[in-house]
Length: 172
Image (tube, rainbow, N blue to C red; front, top):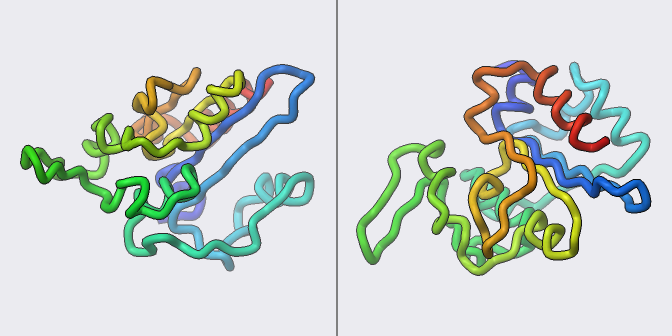
């Protein structure tokens, strides 16, 4: 899989305050991009790094599965505390389960576990938020849904250019 496709296939999350008086925050999470690949075919990300910040490292919460690690980043909690312990949904009380990651993304109770992801915190503090392909960000959590959403399966019909255009339009 080429690097640009990996960037948008995996996940990209945007949270921004629309007000001109407030600082804007963009959180990019790129699943499956090794540290030594950053910069290849990604000159725009280099520009973001030079004019903003970039994490030097991250200790993965559950390195073999994406959803638990991504929700850990969004909530600040370990998987055993936020409840997303696998890429696939399973309810031990009812036996309900999903058979694909994309189906899991549409199960509200998998994400609404009492933990508070960053986009919910932002909304509760009066900020406008958008979500592009971030696990849990397309469903209601604590009664909150982002103002703007591009679901995880949308990358199939779009290009990297059209998705990045959405980010900049949302960001004002």
